[in-house]
Length: 216
Image 1: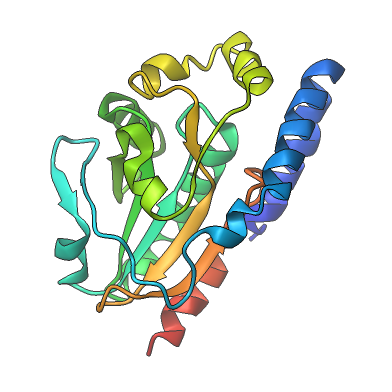
Image 2: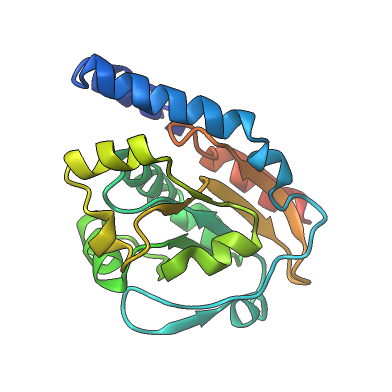
């Protein structure tokens, strides 16, 4: 099976040929500035206590981290939104490994700043069997040290591309999370962490499963 990041890289290379040079320059400059900001290094990591949250799911339920942890460890992944093709590929990759994850008595949840209706559409499109939660305003992402604001020129590019973040993020169009995945043990402590400012790179499902096995 092709690795998730190999699939993401192939998509990236094909996509670059379709994007005008001036748009690529804006995206690359914003990406470099975010990498240089050091935010990924400041985000929560192994050994930190996972901030608690209560967030609405795509189906209208409220999902609390404490309730999830009562049943076992949790894999918590943050993504940008259904409008992001890299997020779609990453979530599909997690769905392909969902049975392997749940076989270890672990719950998988995905969090984005988009409204529940958008999450529901995404869930149905990819037949996701795990909870997709709405962190409107990115308050939870902020607690994990992941939230950042898009620069003006990149926000303008996203508008031109028709992403309509004003609507899907319910009036918080500029704030997004860094792509991140955490393995949280039953005591609420982060035991494995993946955080990257580059949204074209994601946690490899095989690495997540290896981290779960290392919990013992």
